[in-house]
Amino acid sequence: MKARARYEVLVERDAIEVVDMDQGEGILFWDCTPRQRRRMHEALIRDLDRLSPQDFLYEWAVAEPSQFD
Image 1 (spheres, helix red, strand yellow):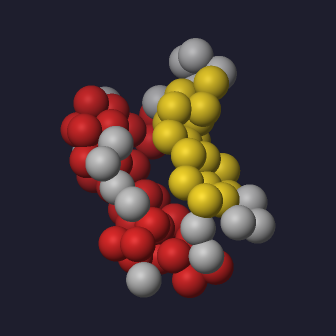
Image 2 (cartoon, helix red, strand yellow):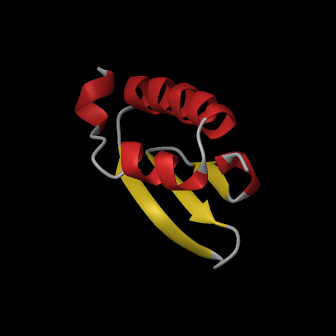
């Protein structure tokens, strides 16, 4: 199963949130600049399509917006 089947990415003006659709709760959240937001969102979408739910959480639990400057 791909992570996309379990998680949804919500993008707001200054933030990104990953929601676990099974639990209905946000599990990851970042405040970020517009540039970071765009780049993070693109990377999140790629990983949702290629990783399992467990691998996705493992990879993104340590992510920081500053990595996407």
